[in-house]
Length: 42
Image (cartoon, rainbow, N blue to C red):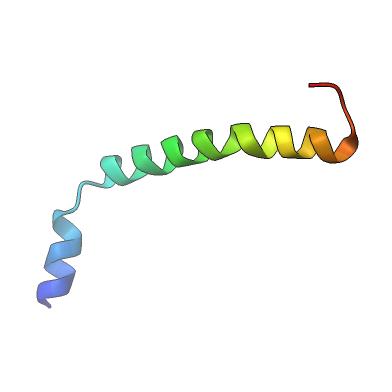
């Protein structure tokens, strides 16, 4: 039960913000990679 209480102490908004930042950081290279695959002009 100590592990469950540890999970309850974690700030949920902090996790959400980190996840959003990670998705934004990954979105840039993904878009460029897809454009390169399609042979589009960057």
